[in-house]
Amino acid sequence: MKLMRPNQWNLARRTTVLVAVTWVPLVAITAVLNPDGLISLLKDYRAYSRFFLAIPALLIGELLMEVRFRAVMAHIREAKLLTDVDTTYMDEVIAGLVRLRDSLLPELAILALLMIHTVASYKGLADATPWLTHREGNELQLTAAGWYVVVVSTSIFQLLLGLGLWKWLMWTFFAFRLSACNLRLVPTHPDRHGGLGFLGLTASAFAPVAFAAAAVIGATWREAILHDGARLMDFKLPAIALVVIIALVSLAPLGFFVPRLAQLRRKGILEYGVLGQIHSTDFHEKWIVHRAGHESEFLQAAETSSLANFGRAYENIVALRPFPADRGALVTLAVAVPALPVILTQVPLIVVLDDLLRALH
Image (tube, rainbow, N blue to C red; front, top):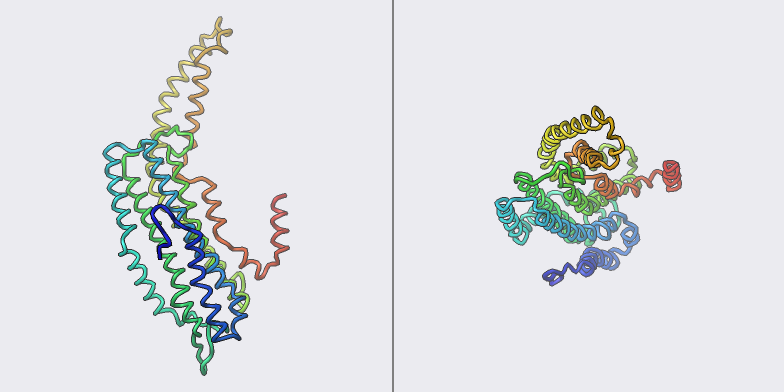
């Protein structure tokens, strides 16, 4: 459809076209063939969450992943974290991943799995929503709009979700290969991750995918609470499981670097500890044991600032965190899980806001 061109993502155009393809025909089909169900469609929060929230989020996520991964690779080269041999090896890995990214085979595989899943589970989508189904005897049958949403609209969302997960899997493979290289890490690096703190930027690249999935799941839970008599606490364990899964998937690639950074910290404490012992002993001998008559020289002595600078460097080693992600990455992922629409089904907004204000105090 020429919605994408070389070096042009055309995000606004692609979003507009996909939202139109997934939503407009539903309204038209329902208005013509099932006018009594039109109001239920226009009030269906599940449809809005899929087509107006999840699909744009997945398209944004695709772009964000590309930008973040390119930034990571550029930083690796500029910081010279790899030897020439490892640089050549990683170039080969990247070339293989680019071929996979541009290949039709993964997309066809995702599409085939999607078709199998749709055939096996479409009957479970039928509920008593007027625009989605109509009753024939004792059974609910999909309306024309229902078939469209199953075959086209939901399939587009699921295909984009599958492609997002596939690209994240490729990044995970890249991180695994990178972690096996002889990285030039420094235990005193000010980022307190040995020089790998920049990798924490990648975790937030998964946030749009997490948001899309959580928005659709939350919309299903909201529907169950509002119309099927479910309670908010019925989804406590699934909600916990969802948060855990999102955290594991988004942070798993960074886990490959934990053993290397933990070893770097231990080695740094020992190696710099020896140097610190020698430096501190010399300082003690000169300015404590034999300082008599030299007190006036202390403030101008080079050893004073040298010892202070070494102390700060050693503190960076002790504070080195083996997991290369900061609190900001975790906050981004937490915000990506839209729980508020589900909570508001049983807890009034004024109560939620009041609790937030109390927490600020």
